[in-house]
Length: 565
Image (cartoon, rainbow, N blue to C red; front, side, top):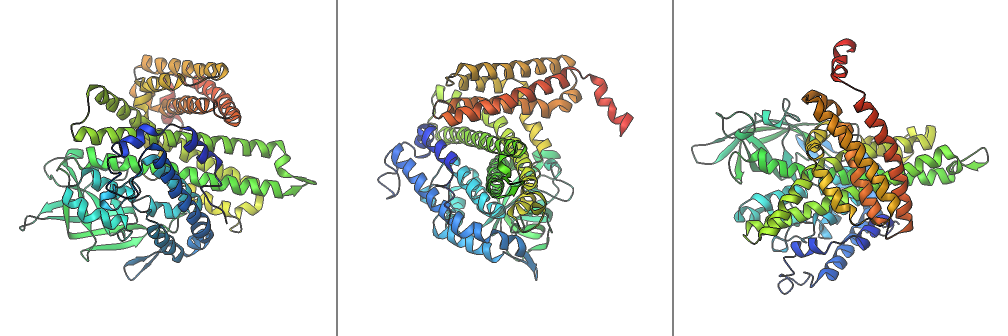
């Protein structure tokens, strides 16, 4: 059976060639735990060896346990019986194996039972799990709940909850969305009030809650009745008891193994996480950014699975006496799929690097250990993470939907049947550019980094490591096209006009960042050079089209909605 780590050449390329030493030193606090914990690494090389060993174990579980049960999990699905959620049999078995392998506390420090790995390695793990079964990722990926408690909870809360997350005894959920508050989280109305006993209690309904049957749920609720909007919201830790009722689970298009629940809180006891009034503006944004990066990695995993299915089918399927992979229309589709998957993986990997650096420096800052230069680095990485995270989710999730669409097309009629995996993968992919913030919401989050020039600052740094002149020239063309578009949008001085073209501007920005990253990697591998040039060529063509569209439009384009709709 396949090992989803060993058989992925690109993941291994990234681990072997991309410098992670600073991230490792930050995560390991300069290896200060090497004498306290038997499995703590002594140096960078040993840390990398530990990462690869863990990914090897996970890759084997994905290939031999999770993937073979994915079809059965999809058919059986999570069920709602007598007011309780029942996981599919394959889901229960997978969670059991992951817990036995000590893989449920990926980023949590060792003192709480975790394995203290950086987000970069966690993103790779999420991709592999998602390639095996995208629905399982929504449970495996909810380790972000434990990470949020670690980052913002009290030491007492950490000791009480984190070891049980790391052992797999506790599963988590984040309850943000409500029937009338989806993307508009400042409109959350579930109430948190202090009772006569001085404790907090929750009342109200949450909907579309992934794994709402979890043991520990982070709930965004209105704690300040006199304050409207985001300032009136706090984040609470709720431990499952009989006061909260699961009213139903959604009957969804895909990821059937993942229960999506509607919850009714009835004077449910809870405890405050962190400080009052910071629930949305600090804690939930942090939680959601982690989830968005996880969904981006999930999308890459789904796309990887779909590409492999399409590639295998194209090699074996003959028409007119020839394997269809030899038809130009088909192999171009496969080339585009392979290139875009590697592009998305590189962007997600790089974004994870930036988040690791940011969070590592934040932890040092909380301990007053940052000098002036490192404080400057923290500000820089915070700015970069602010636009790279939504940009990664946009590119990866839209890419996954396109790859799955083309995978069905390559299969032809049989791809539309349940006899082939691409049908399920296509259904699973569809939610990735919807949940944890739609693509349109991500554009709003990313556009600032593009318009203000933070993206160009990043690209100037990346450009220094590109060796090939033709790649530098191509990236220069991309940047000049984007600059011209930004200047024009600013000149129009109309916020609605900017919003109208925001997605095009963000996509142009993503083409530049990805082209820089792929071009950097070209020095390590001739194949990577081919990938970089193929991606860059297509990016130049798309960017030129976007430039024409933006520069030829005026305020009148906005008024079309009144004349056509």
